[in-house]
Amino acid sequence: MRNTRPPAAQLPLVLLVGCLAAACGAGGAASDAGSDGEPVQLSFEHRSEWRQLWIEGTTDLPDGAFVDYQVAHEMSDTTPAGEWPATNLIESGRASVTEGHFWTRINTFNWPRGSVRIVVQFPVPPQPAEVDARYGRLGERLAGDNVITVAGARIVEVEHVFDHRR
Image 1: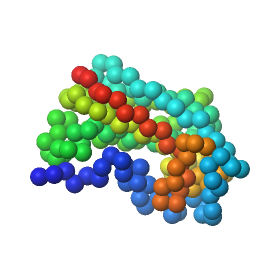
Image 2 (image 1 turned 60 degrees about the horizontal axis):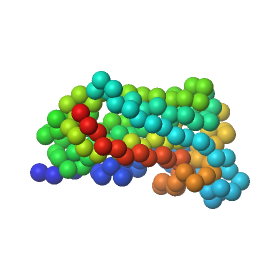
Image 3 (image 1 turned 90 degrees about the vertical axis):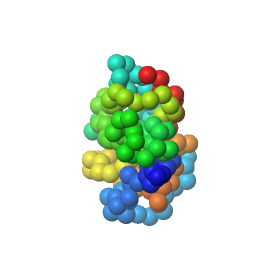
């Protein structure tokens, strides 16, 4: 029996379902990346320590903004969920920006060796009103090379893939 979960490449779409039309934006045409918009610096690193995966990032987003993250072990794409060695081979959540930094950690106890994909995105709603006012509810005022369009919303997305070793 195959896992019916969508591929990891579609995780951003899954997280945005139901929120794009109303919560993400005010509508209207979005500017092309790099023109008349505001670029956002967003980067992160990972480290494994004592069976914990730490995701630590830096950004120029204002304090109180939220970044969303998705973590998926390759086994989540190839093995039915009932056969996973750990229930959290797919994790997602939010991290708040404070003084240009954000972080989270994920328990990797019982994770097997394998490829892991981390995706960090901004803005996924809800965001504070001042963040929506600055960047747009649908990210329509975002610019830069790391801006992608998903279901009509413009989001900053940064991805990292690495080999998990126990």
